[in-house]
Image (cartoon, rainbow, N blue to C red):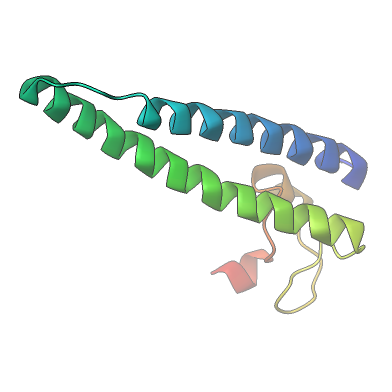
Length: 105
């Protein structure tokens, strides 16, 4: 059984990791200055992948920040919709989930 404190430490570490990755993605997107059309096309394809990764990372950051807020308010581990306790197994897989299995479905 994982404690709320252990989950908080994991969430904070994941948040720091994601923020670092997003900074790297932003730096990569800002670094392109190809003059050749072929190079520019190749860079643009790579940029689209980086942008999707960045969007996904931003979404996960918002979810983690919300989970950390719930921890601070003493509401972590309880479904935001029905108030039921969220199962340990579900929190092990999705530590930032705000919903129990029933409400998530």
